[in-house]
Length: 258
Image (cartoon, rainbow, N blue to C red):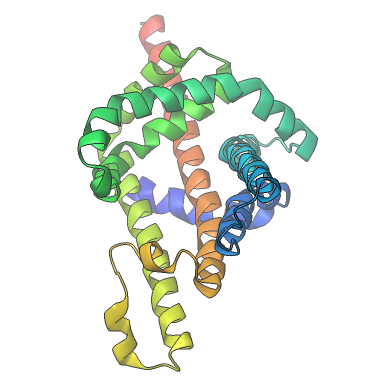
């Protein structure tokens, strides 16, 4: 389990050595602010069209962040610096594979989600065990330009070979994210209630966003935490991917030599 500490220690240090990655990691935060500032739309066509366009742009920005952050972090981990333009080009280049991989995951989960839409948050908790598979799949696209099937197979082999470490990392990352969200919720409620401790009784500790998604202060606090967490999480799994992929190659070469 020493690997877990090393991945997290070096991952935390790495996120402060980059600049470009913050441009992409902040995009989901801006999207949350856009949603929080939305008022009840007027019942007229121009406003509806404007809202639709804004939502479409938000989805594009989310996808750019979704792809850009792992791409920048992977390249940084192998000692390569990439520009904003290179990252945008990579987003276009790998968009089909990443969308296909995402759709495959949704398809697998869809029967459960349809039957239990209100329990989606609870479903995501056990899925944190295999979060490394998703990250490794993306890194596989960037490193080898493989197809979806080959990349998923490779990611799964690495995950099962180092299950204890990678599953534990997935759980730890989920716990950290949950702590950030709850801490943001607690701080928001306390500040806005004049630090009245009884106001905490109104907070949904399982998912503070349910009642605070339109609260600008919560969106600000939670967005800052999520922005940092996103880079940290990707950095940790990038380091794990590189170490275990290198180890897998060495093992394969040794078997061939024998």
